[in-house]
Image 1: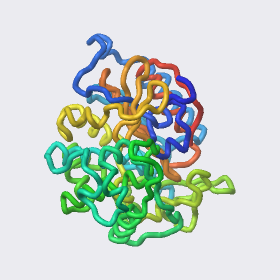
Image 2: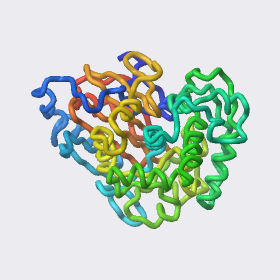
Image 3: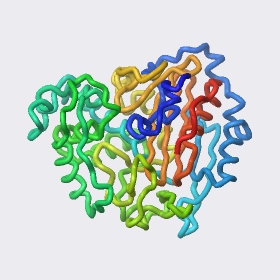
Length: 406
């Protein structure tokens, strides 16, 4: 693919759309309708196996201190490859392993789209409804013209208010109150239908709609109706005190000017050097903003993928609405609801990636061949795009393109 393809998505777009090869996954596949012949679907490619090219590549990165985290490849519900490297908590000497939850950043945004679609299939919301149908105190042009579909597809024409990356939140209530008001300061800068690369307000407003319709916080609703239904027992919107205390949550290690790394959650005075997230520290959020983030284990993300395919978390027609192509992003790449989707090696792949200071996360679903790939890391300096490309190459046989992320 060329530089505009899903594999060439640059870091700024990764932070917003995040997916397949920049984390950018692939397209609106029919989850229940595989396409290739049965014999091809059941083949385990050599590169995906223990000791294969993908396994050797990640092991080399870890040996060079360029990867700390977990990678997992699953085929039709069976783990083919699972590897863990580095430390989840250096201070306490806790190593990374399959049961450790990692910060998801934007890789958690599709959970919000799933929540909205659950309400849609119940008849409690319509995707054509405008923001003002459910929420008050928005500018008239937003309340009356921007629909739920616009928000989920990244075509609202909204811009997001500025945030102070140095603010330290002290409670769930403070985070919720701040983002309720923050979302209402969004500006209409282009007509609805204009692609925006998923402005932050497009994530926050659907979360507010979930809260208005259900009468529950976004976090509580998603934990019960998404994570709970999928059996994702190690996944949650953990608070900062839980992050500090629980040995099953990986700490995020941020690179600093002296070349070393610091534990983000134990050093709230330190910030990121990333030019796209300057000064940010994910530990300053008491809990991730509604509609964003959360923490998940690699096996739990496989459970989520399987639940999307078998009707557990969404009826299959609504799962196809989630992953169906909405907006062209490049050659063979499209935006779906809160995720990018694309065609690679003659098959659909879809999923989501996210980058936070000190962490990376990616999950890709290959519905035609029954594969799921997960990459979770907890330090800066990871060649993130390249790892995702190597995963895709191992599963599909397609040659990787683009450069390193991280």
